[in-house]
Length: 181
Image (cartoon, rainbow, N blue to C red):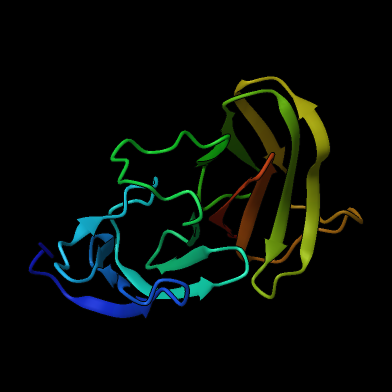
């Protein structure tokens, strides 16, 4: 039942050793002994290469590290069957324009429901450069914020790669952007 694609990692469920999870070129698959009928783990994980899986036993979470789409936490405590319809995220980063940019860029994002939102700009070492929104309550729908290429102190940020981090409810997303001078 596995697709004929590369497999990168196999994880055994420590609570149920007969259950296996594999990371493949198109997501995560799981199967249980004795039949090992493999099925896609349909929890909103995009169809991208999953290069690493880690099982966090106390929370029954499986963390999937993907190629190019960040990391995903899969809650296995409530896994009773495969759900092929993706979960609706509470927020999404839609991108920025222009990118690369100089001197400013518009960052677009969408909220599925109203709530507090934090939006920050980080450098490649993970340091906060500019806080654009700090737990600010916003309505549901399409939103945007502008970054003028300046730090929180008002200094001009140097050319380079930066990361936008959006946090809303229990959801967070990152986006790589580039400032060119």
